[in-house]
Image 1 (tube, rainbow, N blue to C red):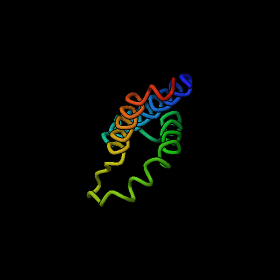
Image 2 (tube, helix red, strand yellow; image 1 turned 120 degrees about the horizontal axis):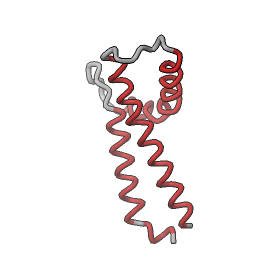
Image 3 (tube, rainbow, N blue to C red; image 1 turned 60 degrees about the horizontal axis):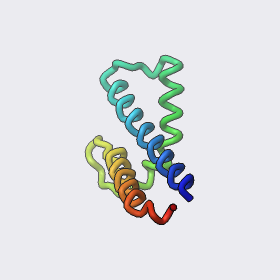
Length: 95
């Protein structure tokens, strides 16, 4: 069961990394540091969109419209942090 706990923590780490990379990349695209016409940038952006949109979608439906400000990544990150706390505090159940 310890390996199951470690796999869950690894998955949460990877999702957290993808969300942070997505947020930073969106800032760089909006400030025109990165250009979506570059094939590599467009490919990475589409990959992150495909991975994270199923996670962001339900959160965006719950959140009220914020005039162009997307708080879904922040809410998902807070959810990941809360889930990590719950898992660590109940780690004895996995051993």
